[in-house]
Figure 1 (tube, rainbow over the protein chains, first blue to last red):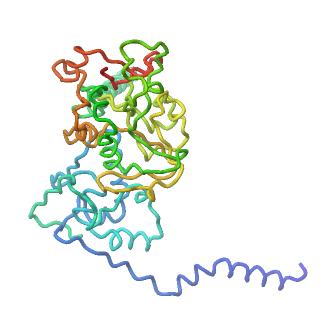
Figure 2 (tube, one colour):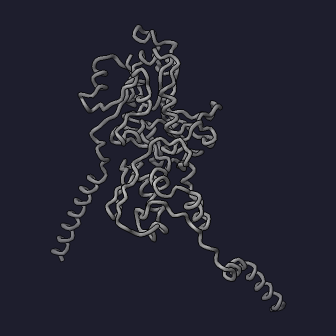
Figure 3 (cartoon, each protein chain N blue to C red):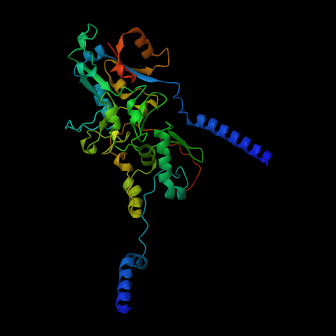
Length: 146
Length: 246
């Protein structure tokens, strides 16, 4: 094989260029974890924090199907609390009042763009919201902090 | 060997029976199977309130229905239509003579035999046990078969992003996005709370009557039994459940 050195050098350069983002990511310090605004007043979510962190989208999809397809509107969590299954009405209004400091920060960090907000309206403090679904009842028993 | 096989079949049979029973119990919508919601419009009472838009405004406000000025793109859940266009009654009869040239209220008829449901390829629209023809916007792929199938023009397609055209946005109900179909949902979100539809609540003249057709003592049943009513295009066999008491 003539020009062996040239070919091998070219291959090595090509490989280095292709894998450059990987090396750079490994060499640089990891991105700081997003600082999330914790809900004021609420101490527990409807499921353990670890589960919510990884699988809240699954839970929300299940809520969606239960409400829209089955007409079931309340969810009983492991502690027996009954909450209204509503993204805008329960999650955002009762606990995570500031979407930009909770949902968006983590979604931006993870590089995901959920389409939920294309339709579901984010309740605002000044929004003309007259009455909402019943707020989740909160027991005083301490649970997993959010 | 034969004993094992018999055991297996017996177990499989019991499991299948248990699954079927469980499915039958689990799938039933709560407290919905016993009801059949319907609407009756007292056309004469409605016409007395000439120019009234209370029901339309209440509905469109409650459901974030946009006010798109371009008629090619407009979205509507409930609106008024000339009588001649609503009811294709060719011979001018004495019963409806007074209504000719006037406008009547139209919206989704929540048919007993809805053609929109039959054509939907993703089952994004379906008829609930209580008669509400519902749309799951999450599943709608925007094919518009249902728009073509509905003989009443009750469905609107979102050709453009509706959000810039919202006059008043409520977070109580989602908006829609570009590329999905929408229509009257008979205020199923209010029915779940035990409230009547927003249009019925808003009507200042009591011209809209909402109730359960399966309840023989309901006001709607009594009204329909006592007075003459017509439905839109009954000859098509869709069995619309919006009655016009004339």
